[in-house]
Amino acid sequence: MATLEPPQTPNGALPRRLSSENLKPESIAFGTDAATVVPDSNPPTTSGAHEVAAAMEMARRHIEGLTTAKLVPKEPDQTRIVSSYAFAFDIDGVLIKGGEPIPQAVEAMKMLNGMNNHGIKVPYIFVTNGGGKSESERCIQLSKQLQLEVAPGQFICGHTPMREMAQKYKTILVVGGEGEKCRVVAEDYGFEHVVTPGDVIKTHANTTPFRKLTEEEHENSRVQDFANMNIEAIFVFADSRDWAGDQQIILDVLTSKNGVLGTRSENYDEGPPLYFAHNDVVWATSHESSRIGMGALRRSVEAMFEAVTGKPLKTIAFGKPQTGTFEFATRLLQQWRKDTNGIDAPPQTVYFVGDTPESDIRGTNEFNQSSECSWYSILVKTGVFRDGTIPKYEALATVDNVLDAVRHGMQRELKKDLQREISGGKNPLIDIPNAEA
Image (cartoon, rainbow, N blue to C red; front, side, top):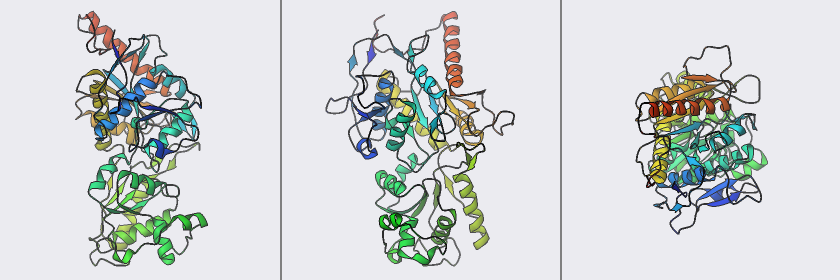
């Protein structure tokens, strides 16, 4: 049977395979040549995960408008890649917890990459509300954690859809994350002028009476001419490391005249819009109980604004459960299927595996109601959700861990395929274009 090589870059070269050892995120950013990341310093010529990772990277570059590469055929092999279904994984609480891999995660990835009784591979992507890091940085990190070959194109972060906002806003305030990482991400997304709370404090030290910059923060922050600057939008890219200081600065911008710090709107309706990368109130860490996250900050800012101004504040959130994240994921999977199989449609079923009922499961279930393909929600018990509690939003399946989730989805598809065979229907499990009858 015929199989396909991952798409080639315009000059005919396949995506580079780079070791995660000492690899810098900017080396594999979307503005550079396509690449996959392997965990080994001396990687083998291929890996079980290579085909899916490389093809998904090129599909991502297609929808980002970065390539028009074509597929090239390769010699047949014994591994079949399905395209009728795919998996989408949350990361924290599903694959990783407290920076360490959840025990079953490595085996789950191996199963998807061909180590199963049927010798098939199943495509997958990662959809996380976690922010403050570029897709490239998350790719390197997960490759090391799971000892897995992955590509930046497989990652959709909470702030990924914000990339398109760079065409609308030029000067923005970016909040959250470690050090200068969020500024770097925003600049990589194409925002022309990115300022941070550190810039505000360095320029006007009395802005936050109880917050002083460290030596490193002071060195990295930039003095800005805020009196002659219109901040057009505020973006919270990642969890705040200083709630008091960040909220004070956000409030100052929101209550300003047209985003000019140092001014004050009379009606409190002239400030710029406020965007959050996601709306998770809690998230799973190595602590025995879930920790508060960006969604809690969002509610705090809204309450603070109303307490100060007497007016409600309308903010906007990306990430799960918002449909934009799921729409982007569907576009990516559809492009992957078109590139690799010549079928211009998303997989018939996408199994989303998450640990948070309020974002992962709610978002999957709600998007499934309007999606052209089926989004099937699976809840695991290794993260925010705790066994014995009743989730506000119920998944179509609840399992112990991510390995059980993968088994559930694959077994469900195999049963569907068997039913088609019994009824005399065509077997769509493996889509093989141009195969000989």
